[in-house]
Image 1 (cartoon, rainbow, N blue to C red):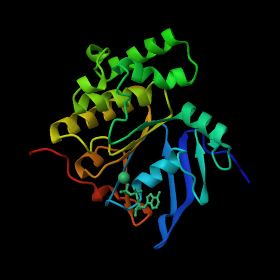
Image 2: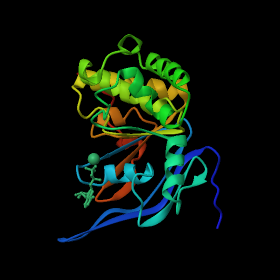
Image 3: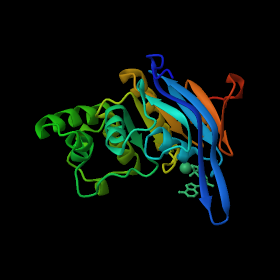
Length: 243
Ligand code: ADP
Ligand code: MG
C-alpha cells in the first residue's frame, strides 16, 4: 500500500467512519468521510448541530481514532500510530482553536501562547520570544501580561489563535471559533483568520454555523448526518454586506 500523498496536501482523510455504541443503539457519527486539505487552503465545514462536525475535527486532529478509514497529516500516515507518535505528530503539525478558548486562567496571555513550545521542551526565553511575535501577529502585543480573566471574549479567542499558531503548524483545526462571540467580534475574528491564512500560509479547517463566514473560505463542505459533501460554488452564501 502506498503510504505517501501529494506533498502539498497537509491533511488527507479517506473513508473515515466513527461509530459510538450506546445503550440506546449504535450511532454512526461519521460515515465514509473523505477530505483533502492543501497547503495555504482555508476550508469551512457547516452543518446542523449533532451532524458530526466536532467528531470530525477530533478525528482529523488525532484526538479521537476512527473505526475505519485512513488519515495522513503533513504527508505522514497517522493510522495505527501509538499514542506517543500520535502526540508528536499532533504537536508538530496541527494547531487547535475551540469555541471556548480553553486558556489556562492562572497564566498570562504570553505564557498561554508559549505553552505548546514549552511542551516541546523549547528553551523558555526562546518560547516567550516566539509567543510575543505571535501575539503581535494577532494584534495583542499590548495584552501580553494580561490574564484570560482580564481579556474580552474576542481577545481570548485571538490569544487562543496565537497559541494554535505558535508552533507553526501546517494546519489549524478550529471548532466554531466565533460561535461564542457577538456579530461584530465574530467578523473581526474571521477576518483575522483570513489574514493569518494569507500571511503565514497556514491551512485552516474551520467549523462554523455562520454561512456568511463560511463564504470567505476557499472551499465549503456540508456535514449532514455524518456525511461530508463539498458545496458547489453557487451554493455559497452571499457576502455579508449591506447589513
Ligand atoms: P456537532 O459538532 O456537529 O454538533 P458532534 O460531533 O459533537 O456534532 O456529535 C455528533 C453526534 O455524535 C451527536 O449525535 C452526539 O450525540 C454523538 N456523540 C458525540 N460524541 C459522543 C460520544 N463520546 N459518545 C456517544 N455519542 C457521541
Ligand atoms: Mg460541535
